[in-house]
Length: 267
Image (cartoon, rainbow, N blue to C red; front, side, top):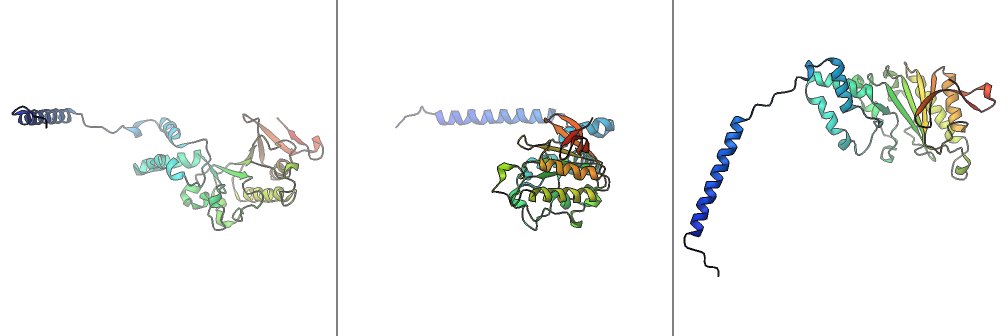
């Protein structure tokens, strides 16, 4: 057994208590000297600058949709709504008017018949702020979700500030590679055509439709793309094709100038 010098324990206890006391006094001094935190006068900034700051915080390139991970990705940003009534008014306007919201959810968890889309779940005061919607075509192409249908319950008529619908095509089942897997060559094309037509018909202030898709989808001369562009042309709306992922050009659908079924880009 180790023999400690007489008084070792007592001496070390005294030194420890002295050290703790010294640290406590130092902390108390720092706390007393600390300047009180002052709130930043955010609302003293010009409205244009406040809008730019809020857009950096709240607007994202990703489409807003129902997703199991929303509580992680959106929770911190939306906490800004609870700062004050005035902050809520400015932040909510930026969030809902600056982002694109998906009309029908694409995660398989929300393919059930009773699924209510996110845009329908929003209170009416937020729905009127929306300016951009997305219709994503391709998920469930073999058997489209039964909840994917246009009806009064979607409340599209209340979205009076929506100016553009973005259509993103993941697959075109009319292509030969899908032969033997699809229900019919034109089945999904007709389904998509009626879906887009129903959406456009119910949006009171729609000005145009923007098309984009994966590289495997024929965006020029493809059966699905031509059919959708034709629907938009018949509605006298502007059509915009994202060409090669980084440029936008007006699209005249199936123009008679290019022959039967040929897609023509016009400047």
